[in-house]
Image (cartoon, rainbow, N blue to C red):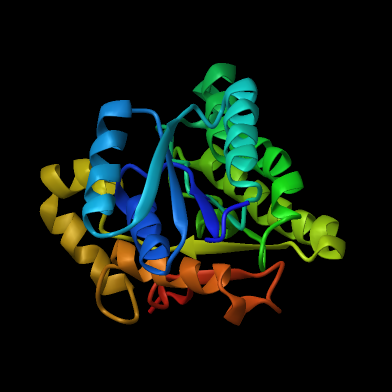
Length: 252
């Protein structure tokens, strides 16, 4: 069994996920980066190793039940435990109004944001039981409460599911000392917003006006909270969702 704590971060080859992996690595974890692009994954691992982080990449699709189970079990068996599972992978998946929404679009968005959390968590639980201050950290969104903007209704629905499954996991796993929490990032300056940033920079810049603290979030802002939730300092926190949005959820 590994002496170091072991963390899996899904969707960790860029944006918030990579900063989370970097922060956990700096905190002394062996970090497992998951992604879909093996070439980018290898580069990200090289970056972290150059910073002195013990990092390794596993390429698999978090929406594929068989791939998830095979890889999570392989990681758990290799290290003898999993201490932290960060379900960072997810996304908008596009926009569609309900009247014209295809079943395929609906299922893809739900699979990316909700099924993925179920698949990874289920596979990791036997190894989390062997971890130190073990926890699952999921990502929800303001859309879970306000149902999302135009065409993002299923994204909001999927994130509401993440909010609920986080609390359900916390109830289900409390007897094993495994905690489950979620973070709810506000508008974070990542490639997620690349299209509007490049086509309508004035709109992107104006978003800060709707945030109480007057700026957009940075990936490091999320990484710090995730690292806290994974730590011993948060060992009495479970079933919670922490808003990381500079007060954005309250409006101004």
